[in-house]
Length: 180
Image (cartoon, rainbow, N blue to C red; front, side, top):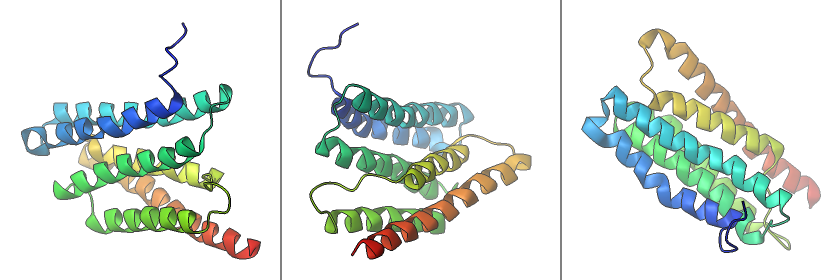
């Protein structure tokens, strides 16, 4: 099946950003306490997260990697995870300190990457991609209506995400310092 030429990996990325409010809306339905809406919100966020993989593979396989896409893709990732964490924190289902830590790192490293650009966007490192995956799973487990006996599972995933969040930020700065 051949897609129309106006549908590109960047179109998918922009669509992902535009659909984030639907996940947020689902999280807040019925006061955020209805397990059915929690599962619906998780499904929306999961599908949007999976499009991150699809648009990246599509861009690489079709030789459609663009500076705009290299910039927008991590912005979409940060918007997705940020919207979920802020929503969950507002609902008292996710610790504010984790939201602040992760968003500070994400915004700080994004600004850092933009400031140290030399001829193009600095692509995400492999560690950064794993960090994003762990953040998505970690936060995703807070969206789902887990029973209390599985709390250790949620905490374990988000703990790994926090460690990767801090270490990859340090790594970006370290690599930049060595290249100077």
